[in-house]
Length: 363
Image (cartoon, rainbow, N blue to C red):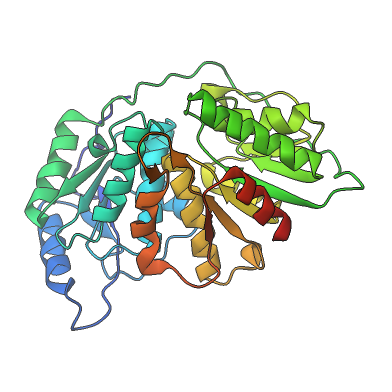
């Protein structure tokens, strides 16, 4: 999907607006000088700036509004959990043809290397096949404020690359609900890949969905038809389990919806979609996945960090599935991303399907 920026004009009409990430913690903040230089260059090159003082927080409830009102995004050094979430969310928006991101650049200033662990994680997921697009074409990296300006100007001239996806159908689905069964234990939300085609991963997903149903757990998912997500849903449905899910019109138009869902919650954007999945779940499994799964995990951890009632006493279990023949775990690179933000009880890792189901039952 190609696109260009709205033209910057003068007079009584506002300039194009760039949203700047990050905060300045005080006069001794090492990123203060870099931010000042970035502000100067943006103003000098005709941009209006949102969050110039670093005092606006991104949340699930406001991120779609922030994306709509901005024409470009610049991520500063010193990445916070919220900054990581916003950057990954923008990439996921590109992947899913979010119309509100049409023609909008996202540039990451990584002069302090705080973004490097995220890039290494995304590189790993691309190698493992859960990210099909080159994220580097959408999250443009810069080493200096001057390079940020160059990247913004490049996107103004050339637009945003085509992600290589097309809509298959118009979405006419509506929400519906089926009551939980009398022997229901709890709902487990599974965040996972919709693109993995490896039969071993698909079988793992199917068996997890089946095991949840056989043990009277409801299965909540992103209501996808493909990859591990589709396999988890099929496993639960075919075993007679209660299976709920949420999706948004523009993704349904790309992927469709699975058969057999007990309850479905249609939402207008991926952020309210995540929120309803969290509301309707008692625990969370992070299965092998791509950028969308990383985005969902970051949202869970932000809620935990903020002490949100939505995540009170709800465990997060990361299935670090061994990658056959490589001697690594699927989520090994995730450890480096989460290390600066980890707090006791935020999440736990398991590395076998047997241990995964055991932990679910104990949680």
